[in-house]
Image 1 (cartoon, rainbow, N blue to C red):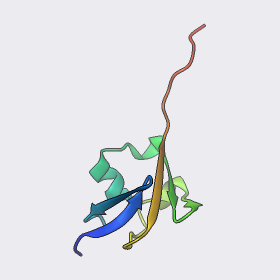
Image 2 (cartoon, rainbow, N blue to C red):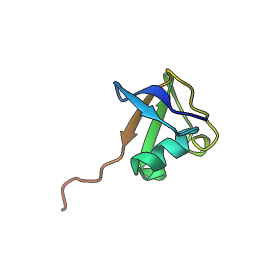
Image 3 (cartoon, one colour):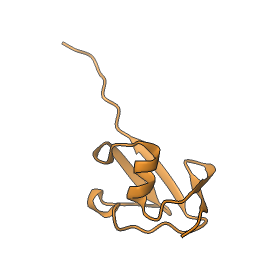
Length: 71
């Protein structure tokens, strides 16, 4: 498969990834640490590896960031 253009976090992004998991790998994101919204629907954590990407898909990625105040 060749490259496709998707909308990633509000910006156009060209990728050769064929699945959401490949996209996360390409971006260097740790799978358990992110939530993925695919075309306005949140994917289950175990569903990212099977979700195929298509041209013009809309992907939003939210990453967990630790922090807080130590007591």
